Amino acid sequence: MGGALENRAIFIHSDELDQGGYPEECPFDSRRAGRTLETARSLGLLALPNTSLVAPAATPAEVLEWFHTPAYLDVLRRAGRGEHDFKALKMGLGTPDCPLFKDMYEYLSLAVGGSLTGAEAILDGTAKTAFNPSGGFHHAGPESAAGFCYLNDVVLACLMLAQAGKRVLVIDIDAHHGDLTQQAFYHRSDVVTVSMHESGKTLFPGTGFVEEKGEGEGLGFSVNVPLPVGTYDAIYYSAFQDVVIPVAQAVSPDVIVLELGMDGLAVDPLAHLNLTNNCYADIVADVVEMEKPVLAVGGGGYNVNATVRGWTLAWSIMANGRDDASSLAAGLGGVMLENTAWFGGLRDRTLLSHGGYREAVDHEIRETVNRIKEDTFPLLQLG
Image 1: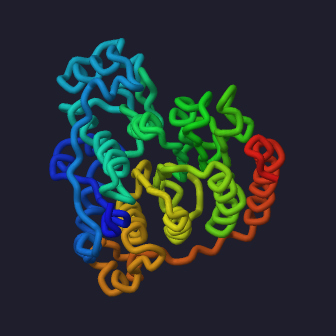
Image 2: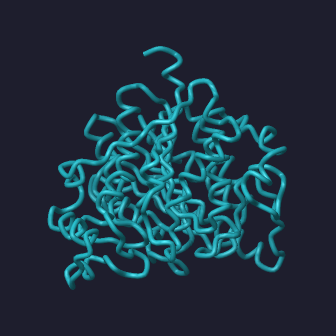
């Protein structure tokens, strides 16, 4: 494998993913990935050395069955043809957060296929970094849909990597807990899950507490950092440094799967964190600097303009390293991203946290970090 391939970054998308998809009234906007590609391309971020656009391949049913039941897949197929019954509703299909739409099985198997295409590229050595912004469906269960997620690409990609003998570290920084990803590997040590998310006390899916540490062979290999309402950049990044970095060092993974939901941004309408994309950018840079292959997937993000900007910024770092091309974007970003509020390029303005809650947020997060260090770190032989 030559040096060029060792550092190759691939952006996974195709025109098919811009057709159809989730209904317009659904908060989950299928167009985010295509708009991210368009923005990245307009800024020259797909013309950089060692970067390329790769089309996803649809996921075969036998691969989907690594995690999902045949009965569920059959109901999902029929739902996409307009056949909806009580059995489908019982599986979570046809609800406000998992609406029915035409040809949903075909669309979703392609979106999920993007993450598997990325995993295959990492395994065969044709990419060091792969980004599928259409992925990140970490709430989908073997026989259930929830939280805008129908098929779980994160679990399937991890299974593909683990079956190839790779040790996998999932770093999930979506605002919502990666509940079904955690559940799938709760008794295993070859796939380690770390999730930083708004606390289940205030946000769906109501899970992801420090006590959830894994069981059996997986004890210690599920790590959760629940965060209070109002968590802001500096304390979030401090928690990442204090928990995720040591866990990554202890685990020494072969591959990192990064769930890059942008719903922790202060402008997101569905969560209650107070982050800017500067915090996400710093974390993506830290992950890249671990010098492991990275499969990044999209996830949440319900302010479309902010999500597109954040993902474009993340891609620029994956393609460039810590030098994230913000200077290039600064002269163009405001107009090209249809953002009339901020003309500073891809990076957000710094937000000043309200003095009334900053001290309480700091205290709660420090207590959480201390509990993880006391209860979970010893299980990983971390002092």
